[in-house]
Structure formats: structure tokens, C-alpha cells
Image (cartoon, rainbow, N blue to C red):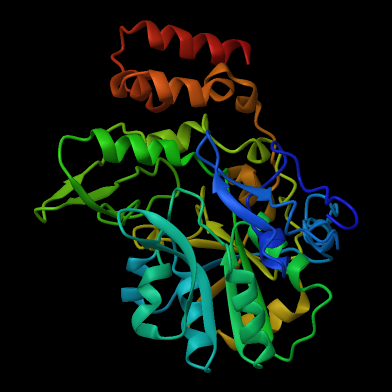
Length: 391
């Protein structure tokens, strides 16, 4: 290297947002999946010229104050198009926004599933392709290259809607902070409980008793939406075209996600939370709702608005969204992950020794540890109860 060595986020603090990778014009940074099944970044010291642009762009190292917007207005919303609403995870608010943007010649950027279950951020400019971005994906998406593509569309003067987790939106905003463009950018971040390890998916695909073609869906409304007690109903398609329904069945993917024992370390102390954020909107399920029982089956979204630009857009979209002010106190109570980024499970033995456990334990043992797949009389139950009592 000719100048300084960049100091990027540590292994425990890195969010895998890839803003640093996209910022490097000399291909000195690349991404890889670590032994714990999460995305990380490595530096090619021979290619690095020491410009430190990557260091300046990293939202962790630069200590971005993501939770400091001046506004947070809470709304209960749902898409007026019932077909689109039923295809969505909650109330279809994001789908309505996406329709609005694409119909005005814009592009929508978000997470889409490819192959069996490779999740990548992609650009969609057609209503026919919008389905790719709908629905939940319980694994971290790969954002490598997407900030560069977002900037390209903004330079061309396009209307861009970008969706992602808080750390991914933070990465985009940090990447764009000193760049000029004429386009219109709207950012939507998600209420996120952390991203689980890809080791869960890998072991599931390798060990289920059939050959998997794709994860058809992580979550659907086949049984409706509920403001509490929601049940995951992942569906998997095999290579013979048969659909396997995991509703109520403990498994490494959805149950493993909900146990939060394989999250990346940065998720256990998230810096990109709060009811006031630099994103334009924060979106999630309106858990705990009691005001709109007639709307529960089809799903409700909670939408938090963070600035005047977002309020104006929301006003423009009244034709496609049903919109009502929501109780902020109740919304926070039932969606604690909106404002609480701390999680003690990062200190658990299951997380600390996760790479070794996945490398040496059988599939059945992995399901017991990470998916609570054991009987009511199993010694594993005693372990889980003890941890709950003393955590």
C-alpha cells in the first residue's frame, strides 16, 4: 500500500452492508462468507492505494447517527389492492409504494430470491417483476454492487425506491453522502430482529429427505394474518414439483431464525434502530393491533414516517393506501425491535461455538440446539429453561 491502511469495522461490528466494497474504485475489497455463515469483507493490500474512502463510507467506523431524525409519525396502513395485499407479508404498504414509483417511470430496489435460496438485492423496473421483492426473506441479502447501481439510476434522474434493513439503508446513505445526483430517492428500512446464519439454510438443504428446488416462501397468508401469535408457514418445492409445508414444524430455517442464536454479532448490539431514523420510512407488521380487527386476516402494516419528504409522498399515495394514525406507545410495546437493538444471546455458548457445532454435530443435534426440535421430556428442554431463568 502507498498510504494509510483503512480501518474498517471489526469482525464483531461489521454489518455486511457492503458499502465499503462498492466505494472502492480499485477492487481492493471483496466479500466472503465467514465460517459462521455471515458476509464479511477482506482487503487486498496489493491493490489498495490507501485513499481511505472505504473507511469514510463505512457507517460503523464513521459513527453514523442513524437514529436522529426530527420526526416519527406512526400509521396503520394497508394496500387498497387486495390481490397485492394478500401477496405481501403484512399489509402490503411496500407493494403500494413500489407500484407508485414504477408507474412514474422509477425503479424499485430490494431483496429477491434466486436459485434455491440465494437472496440478493436487485433492481426492478416493471410491475411484472415486482413479485420478486414481495414477502419475507429470513436470511441476509447480498448487497454487493447495489449501491453503485442505485447511484447510477439517481444520476440518470430517476425516481428510486430503496428498501432494506437499517444497516443496509445506512450503508446506502453513507455511500451517497458526498455524491451529486438529480434523481428522487425514497428509502424504506425494515423492523429487523437480526439476520441468521446461512449455515442454517445450508444444513437444511443438505439434510432434508428430498432434493430441494427452491424455498417457495418463508411466510404466507394461507392461514391469514394475526396481530399476535403469528405462525410461520414456510413452503419448499422439491425437484419433482411437490410442495412441502412446514407450518407448525420446527426447522432450521424459520425456527432457527426465531431463536436468534445464529445472528451476526453486530445484530446483538444494533446501532441502526430507533423510532427516529435517517431513512424516509420504517415498515413492519402492526403487531398487537386492536383498532382494525376486520382487517387482521388480510394483514396490517405499521409505517413510521421520519421526515417531511416522506409525509408528502404519503399524501400523494392516498389513492392506493388506506392510512390511519396509530398509537405510538402501543406500536413500540408490541414491536420492541423497532427501538431495542440489544440481545444477550450473542454471549451464548451456541453462538460462540457455532462454527464448530455446525462442522461436527449431526443434523438432528443441530435441530435440537438451534430449532428447539426435541420432546417435552428431553434434557435439552432443561437446558433451555435454565438459560431463560438465569439470562
